[in-house]
Length: 289
Ligand code: GRG
Image (tube, rainbow, N blue to C red; front, side):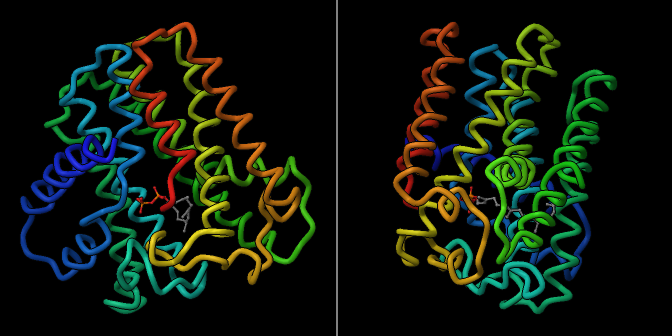
Protein backbone atom coordinates (compact mmCIF):
# COMPACT_ATOMS: atom_id res chain seq x y z
CA UNK A 1 0.00 0.00 0.00
CA UNK A 2 2.82 2.45 0.91
CA UNK A 3 4.40 1.80 -2.50
CA UNK A 4 1.07 2.43 -4.28
CA UNK A 5 0.62 5.70 -2.38
CA UNK A 6 4.14 6.78 -3.32
CA UNK A 7 3.52 6.17 -7.03
CA UNK A 8 0.18 7.96 -6.88
CA UNK A 9 1.70 10.85 -4.96
CA UNK A 10 4.34 11.28 -7.68
CA UNK A 11 1.66 11.40 -10.38
CA UNK A 12 -0.59 13.88 -8.57
CA UNK A 13 2.32 16.10 -7.53
CA UNK A 14 3.63 16.06 -11.09
CA UNK A 15 0.25 17.16 -12.41
CA UNK A 16 -0.08 19.96 -9.85
CA UNK A 17 3.48 21.16 -10.30
CA UNK A 18 3.07 21.18 -14.06
CA UNK A 19 -0.19 23.05 -13.72
CA UNK A 20 1.37 25.76 -11.54
CA UNK A 21 4.41 26.02 -13.84
CA UNK A 22 2.22 27.17 -16.72
CA UNK A 23 1.70 30.54 -15.10
CA UNK A 24 4.07 33.48 -14.90
CA UNK A 25 6.17 33.97 -11.79
CA UNK A 26 4.23 34.91 -8.69
CA UNK A 27 5.46 35.28 -5.12
CA UNK A 28 2.62 33.05 -3.98
CA UNK A 29 3.83 30.02 -5.93
CA UNK A 30 6.56 29.18 -3.38
CA UNK A 31 4.23 29.05 -0.34
CA UNK A 32 1.59 27.21 -2.40
CA UNK A 33 4.13 24.59 -3.43
CA UNK A 34 5.42 24.41 0.14
CA UNK A 35 1.89 23.52 1.30
CA UNK A 36 1.43 21.03 -1.53
CA UNK A 37 4.77 19.22 -1.78
CA UNK A 38 6.03 16.68 -0.85
CA UNK A 39 2.44 16.52 0.23
CA UNK A 40 1.14 13.98 2.73
CA UNK A 41 -0.27 10.52 2.23
CA UNK A 42 -2.60 11.17 -0.73
CA UNK A 43 -5.37 9.05 0.81
CA UNK A 44 -8.10 11.10 -0.89
CA UNK A 45 -6.43 10.59 -4.27
CA UNK A 46 -6.17 6.86 -3.59
CA UNK A 47 -9.89 6.66 -2.85
CA UNK A 48 -10.70 8.46 -6.11
CA UNK A 49 -8.62 5.89 -8.00
CA UNK A 50 -10.07 2.98 -5.97
CA UNK A 51 -13.66 3.98 -6.76
CA UNK A 52 -12.69 4.76 -10.35
CA UNK A 53 -11.25 1.26 -10.72
CA UNK A 54 -14.55 -0.32 -9.62
CA UNK A 55 -16.40 1.47 -12.42
CA UNK A 56 -13.63 1.65 -15.09
CA UNK A 57 -13.40 5.44 -15.09
CA UNK A 58 -10.58 6.81 -17.28
CA UNK A 59 -7.36 7.30 -15.28
CA UNK A 60 -6.64 10.70 -16.84
CA UNK A 61 -9.97 11.96 -15.49
CA UNK A 62 -9.24 10.49 -12.05
CA UNK A 63 -5.87 12.25 -11.97
CA UNK A 64 -7.54 15.61 -12.58
CA UNK A 65 -10.11 14.95 -9.84
CA UNK A 66 -7.35 13.89 -7.43
CA UNK A 67 -5.23 16.97 -8.18
CA UNK A 68 -8.12 19.33 -7.51
CA UNK A 69 -9.00 17.54 -4.25
CA UNK A 70 -5.39 17.61 -3.04
CA UNK A 71 -5.25 21.36 -3.75
CA UNK A 72 -8.31 21.95 -1.55
CA UNK A 73 -6.97 19.59 1.10
CA UNK A 74 -3.59 21.39 1.19
CA UNK A 75 -5.45 24.69 1.49
CA UNK A 76 -7.48 23.41 4.44
CA UNK A 77 -4.30 22.28 6.23
CA UNK A 78 -2.53 25.63 5.70
CA UNK A 79 -5.51 27.51 7.12
CA UNK A 80 -6.11 24.93 9.86
CA UNK A 81 -2.59 25.59 11.20
CA UNK A 82 -2.99 29.37 11.40
CA UNK A 83 -2.80 31.00 14.86
CA UNK A 84 -6.48 32.02 14.63
CA UNK A 85 -7.49 28.38 13.90
CA UNK A 86 -5.66 25.46 15.53
CA UNK A 87 -2.34 27.30 15.86
CA UNK A 88 0.02 24.49 14.82
CA UNK A 89 3.66 25.04 14.06
CA UNK A 90 4.38 21.63 12.57
CA UNK A 91 2.72 20.03 9.54
CA UNK A 92 3.81 17.05 7.47
CA UNK A 93 7.00 16.92 9.51
CA UNK A 94 8.07 20.49 8.69
CA UNK A 95 7.25 24.02 9.90
CA UNK A 96 3.68 25.04 8.98
CA UNK A 97 3.31 27.37 5.99
CA UNK A 98 2.63 30.46 8.15
CA UNK A 99 5.72 29.71 10.27
CA UNK A 100 7.87 29.55 7.14
CA UNK A 101 6.30 32.40 5.11
CA UNK A 102 4.30 34.53 7.56
CA UNK A 103 0.62 34.65 8.29
CA UNK A 104 -0.70 36.89 5.53
CA UNK A 105 1.23 34.96 2.87
CA UNK A 106 -0.10 31.64 4.21
CA UNK A 107 -3.66 32.95 4.04
CA UNK A 108 -3.22 34.10 0.45
CA UNK A 109 -1.43 30.90 -0.59
CA UNK A 110 -4.32 28.93 0.93
CA UNK A 111 -6.90 31.03 -0.89
CA UNK A 112 -4.98 30.54 -4.12
CA UNK A 113 -4.94 26.76 -3.65
CA UNK A 114 -8.71 26.81 -3.20
CA UNK A 115 -9.18 28.60 -6.50
CA UNK A 116 -6.55 26.34 -8.13
CA UNK A 117 -8.83 23.37 -7.45
CA UNK A 118 -11.62 24.96 -9.45
CA UNK A 119 -9.26 26.23 -12.14
CA UNK A 120 -8.15 22.63 -12.67
CA UNK A 121 -11.69 21.24 -12.85
CA UNK A 122 -12.91 23.96 -15.21
CA UNK A 123 -9.87 23.80 -17.49
CA UNK A 124 -9.98 22.61 -21.08
CA UNK A 125 -7.57 19.81 -20.20
CA UNK A 126 -10.42 18.13 -18.37
CA UNK A 127 -12.20 16.57 -21.31
CA UNK A 128 -15.59 15.64 -19.93
CA UNK A 129 -18.97 17.07 -20.98
CA UNK A 130 -19.64 20.59 -19.69
CA UNK A 131 -22.71 19.39 -17.82
CA UNK A 132 -20.63 16.85 -15.90
CA UNK A 133 -17.92 19.43 -15.29
CA UNK A 134 -20.35 21.88 -13.78
CA UNK A 135 -21.89 19.15 -11.57
CA UNK A 136 -18.41 18.26 -10.29
CA UNK A 137 -17.54 21.90 -9.61
CA UNK A 138 -20.86 22.40 -7.88
CA UNK A 139 -20.39 19.31 -5.69
CA UNK A 140 -16.80 20.16 -4.77
CA UNK A 141 -17.76 23.72 -3.82
CA UNK A 142 -20.60 22.46 -1.66
CA UNK A 143 -18.28 19.96 0.04
CA UNK A 144 -15.76 22.73 0.77
CA UNK A 145 -17.88 25.67 1.89
CA UNK A 146 -20.23 26.41 4.77
CA UNK A 147 -22.01 23.06 4.39
CA UNK A 148 -18.68 21.23 4.24
CA UNK A 149 -15.08 21.79 5.34
CA UNK A 150 -15.37 25.46 6.30
CA UNK A 151 -18.66 24.92 8.16
CA UNK A 152 -17.20 21.89 9.96
CA UNK A 153 -14.14 23.86 10.98
CA UNK A 154 -16.38 26.59 12.38
CA UNK A 155 -18.19 24.02 14.53
CA UNK A 156 -14.91 22.38 15.59
CA UNK A 157 -13.67 25.72 16.93
CA UNK A 158 -16.97 26.73 18.50
CA UNK A 159 -17.33 23.39 20.36
CA UNK A 160 -13.98 23.84 22.19
CA UNK A 161 -14.33 23.43 25.98
CA UNK A 162 -18.03 22.59 25.68
CA UNK A 163 -19.97 19.42 26.38
CA UNK A 164 -21.32 18.39 23.00
CA UNK A 165 -23.64 15.49 22.10
CA UNK A 166 -22.56 12.54 19.93
CA UNK A 167 -24.96 13.67 17.21
CA UNK A 168 -23.36 17.11 17.06
CA UNK A 169 -19.81 15.75 17.09
CA UNK A 170 -20.63 13.35 14.25
CA UNK A 171 -22.25 16.11 12.22
CA UNK A 172 -19.23 18.41 12.77
CA UNK A 173 -16.75 15.65 11.76
CA UNK A 174 -18.85 14.76 8.76
CA UNK A 175 -18.66 18.34 7.51
CA UNK A 176 -15.04 19.02 8.43
CA UNK A 177 -13.63 15.78 7.01
CA UNK A 178 -16.40 13.56 5.64
CA UNK A 179 -17.66 15.81 2.86
CA UNK A 180 -14.38 15.81 0.94
CA UNK A 181 -14.25 12.01 1.21
CA UNK A 182 -17.82 11.89 -0.03
CA UNK A 183 -16.75 13.92 -3.07
CA UNK A 184 -13.89 11.44 -3.71
CA UNK A 185 -16.37 8.54 -3.73
CA UNK A 186 -19.09 10.22 -5.81
CA UNK A 187 -17.09 12.23 -8.38
CA UNK A 188 -15.85 9.19 -10.39
CA UNK A 189 -19.48 8.01 -10.70
CA UNK A 190 -20.61 11.44 -11.96
CA UNK A 191 -18.02 11.20 -14.73
CA UNK A 192 -19.45 7.84 -15.81
CA UNK A 193 -23.07 9.02 -15.44
CA UNK A 194 -23.55 6.12 -13.07
CA UNK A 195 -26.70 7.30 -11.25
CA UNK A 196 -27.50 3.88 -9.81
CA UNK A 197 -24.57 3.76 -7.36
CA UNK A 198 -24.35 7.42 -6.34
CA UNK A 199 -26.41 7.25 -3.18
CA UNK A 200 -24.62 4.15 -1.94
CA UNK A 201 -21.16 5.65 -2.61
CA UNK A 202 -22.18 8.93 -1.06
CA UNK A 203 -22.88 7.02 2.19
CA UNK A 204 -19.66 5.02 1.86
CA UNK A 205 -17.72 8.28 1.39
CA UNK A 206 -19.24 9.84 4.50
CA UNK A 207 -18.46 6.72 6.55
CA UNK A 208 -14.87 6.64 5.30
CA UNK A 209 -14.48 10.34 6.19
CA UNK A 210 -15.84 9.75 9.66
CA UNK A 211 -13.57 6.75 10.13
CA UNK A 212 -10.61 8.83 8.91
CA UNK A 213 -11.37 11.61 11.40
CA UNK A 214 -11.85 9.25 14.35
CA UNK A 215 -8.49 7.60 13.59
CA UNK A 216 -7.00 11.11 13.37
CA UNK A 217 -8.35 11.81 16.86
CA UNK A 218 -6.94 8.48 18.11
CA UNK A 219 -3.53 9.45 16.68
CA UNK A 220 -3.72 12.79 18.46
CA UNK A 221 -4.56 10.98 21.72
CA UNK A 222 -1.92 8.25 21.66
CA UNK A 223 0.40 8.98 18.72
CA UNK A 224 3.91 10.36 18.67
CA UNK A 225 4.63 13.80 17.20
CA UNK A 226 7.66 12.47 15.31
CA UNK A 227 5.67 9.73 13.57
CA UNK A 228 2.49 11.78 13.06
CA UNK A 229 4.45 14.68 11.51
CA UNK A 230 2.30 17.08 13.52
CA UNK A 231 2.01 17.86 17.21
CA UNK A 232 -0.04 15.25 19.08
CA UNK A 233 -1.95 15.36 22.40
CA UNK A 234 -3.42 18.76 21.54
CA UNK A 235 -7.12 17.87 21.59
CA UNK A 236 -7.29 17.35 25.35
CA UNK A 237 -5.33 20.56 26.02
CA UNK A 238 -7.65 22.56 23.79
CA UNK A 239 -10.79 20.87 25.08
CA UNK A 240 -11.79 19.67 21.59
CA UNK A 241 -15.11 17.87 21.28
CA UNK A 242 -14.26 14.44 19.82
CA UNK A 243 -15.64 10.91 20.03
CA UNK A 244 -12.76 10.19 22.45
CA UNK A 245 -13.59 13.12 24.74
CA UNK A 246 -17.21 11.94 24.85
CA UNK A 247 -16.94 8.13 24.90
CA UNK A 248 -13.33 7.45 25.91
CA UNK A 249 -10.44 5.91 23.95
CA UNK A 250 -11.57 2.26 24.01
CA UNK A 251 -15.10 3.10 22.87
CA UNK A 252 -13.74 5.32 20.11
CA UNK A 253 -11.67 2.36 18.86
CA UNK A 254 -14.84 0.21 18.96
CA UNK A 255 -16.73 2.92 17.07
CA UNK A 256 -14.02 3.00 14.38
CA UNK A 257 -14.15 -0.79 13.99
CA UNK A 258 -17.93 -0.68 13.72
CA UNK A 259 -17.68 1.94 10.98
CA UNK A 260 -15.14 -0.20 9.13
CA UNK A 261 -17.55 -3.16 9.29
CA UNK A 262 -20.40 -0.96 7.98
CA UNK A 263 -18.28 0.13 5.04
CA UNK A 264 -17.26 -3.47 4.32
CA UNK A 265 -20.94 -4.51 4.36
CA UNK A 266 -21.82 -1.78 1.86
CA UNK A 267 -18.99 -2.93 -0.41
CA UNK A 268 -19.98 -6.61 -0.37
CA UNK A 269 -21.88 -6.56 -3.65
CA UNK A 270 -18.86 -5.13 -5.51
CA UNK A 271 -16.89 -8.36 -4.87
CA UNK A 272 -13.18 -8.26 -5.64
CA UNK A 273 -13.59 -5.07 -7.72
CA UNK A 274 -13.64 -3.22 -4.38
CA UNK A 275 -10.43 -4.83 -3.08
CA UNK A 276 -8.38 -1.66 -3.70
CA UNK A 277 -10.85 0.36 -1.65
CA UNK A 278 -10.84 -2.29 1.13
CA UNK A 279 -7.05 -2.07 1.19
CA UNK A 280 -7.29 1.72 1.66
CA UNK A 281 -9.84 1.34 4.47
CA UNK A 282 -7.52 -1.09 6.28
CA UNK A 283 -4.68 1.37 5.84
CA UNK A 284 -6.80 4.20 7.25
CA UNK A 285 -7.69 2.26 10.40
CA UNK A 286 -4.12 1.12 10.99
CA UNK A 287 -2.34 4.35 10.07
CA UNK A 288 -0.02 6.03 12.55
CA UNK A 289 0.27 9.38 10.76
C1 GRG B 1 -10.69 24.22 2.90
C2 GRG B 1 -12.87 25.27 2.42
C3 GRG B 1 -11.75 25.12 3.34
C4 GRG B 1 -11.77 25.80 4.52
C5 GRG B 1 -10.70 26.01 5.49
C6 GRG B 1 -9.15 25.45 8.16
C7 GRG B 1 -10.37 24.89 7.57
C8 GRG B 1 -11.26 25.80 6.86
C9 GRG B 1 -10.69 23.58 7.66
C10 GRG B 1 -9.84 22.57 8.32
C11 GRG B 1 -10.34 21.24 8.00
C12 GRG B 1 -9.42 20.16 8.50
C13 GRG B 1 -7.96 20.42 8.61
C14 GRG B 1 -9.93 18.97 8.81
C15 GRG B 1 -9.12 17.84 9.30
C16 GRG B 1 -9.02 16.81 8.24
C17 GRG B 1 -7.86 15.92 8.48
C18 GRG B 1 -8.01 14.77 9.38
C19 GRG B 1 -6.69 16.20 7.91
C20 GRG B 1 -5.48 15.37 7.89
O1 GRG B 1 -5.45 14.73 6.62
P1 GRG B 1 -4.31 13.73 6.17
O2 GRG B 1 -3.90 12.88 7.33
O3 GRG B 1 -3.13 14.73 5.84
O4 GRG B 1 -4.75 13.04 4.95
P2 GRG B 1 -1.88 14.48 4.86
O5 GRG B 1 -0.80 15.36 5.42
O6 GRG B 1 -1.51 13.03 4.89
O7 GRG B 1 -2.32 14.92 3.51
